[in-house]
Length: 238
Image: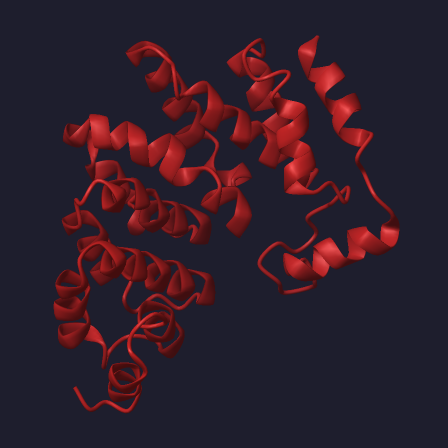
């Protein structure tokens, strides 16, 4: 099976326990952390990408799903990166199957990097081509799952790149009072991306909402602003 060969090739890049501990700290796997009890092999993203380029075309979706169900973080990331490559040149039916797999397995997309390296490529681009299904994002935005909420906002990056901002802004509004720091960062990040494309769109949203936004969300949103304007927002002087 391709899956076994892929796993063996990935393991060649596994690093020391010391590196593994650094991975765990970076991803907050401590007690009470976002990824408590997640297990790492110490394989870097560039090495994962290096390995999967030899397998993504031949692997069946069932094998990708099995890989996604792994207890090892890097194997799950490899599965998601395979999906981002598979969907690029897929038929409409194949794209639908890939997105169905993605949505049916969100419990395994349980890390900020797993979301951020896959959501806009897989779900975002698919919905951009199928706007009649965009309500999927709003359902995810209202989920009890932190990771599904992050998927909802990060997926809109595909829309932002194509100058469609309304869904990003509406989902940002839904998530405005979210309690999770990882959501604050993701929303702020996507608002910043909107601003890179159209400053006025982001500015109008912020003027209306910045006093209610969590501080982290606001800071991420205005990171690239002129310093004087940034300080006005931080001090509530807009």
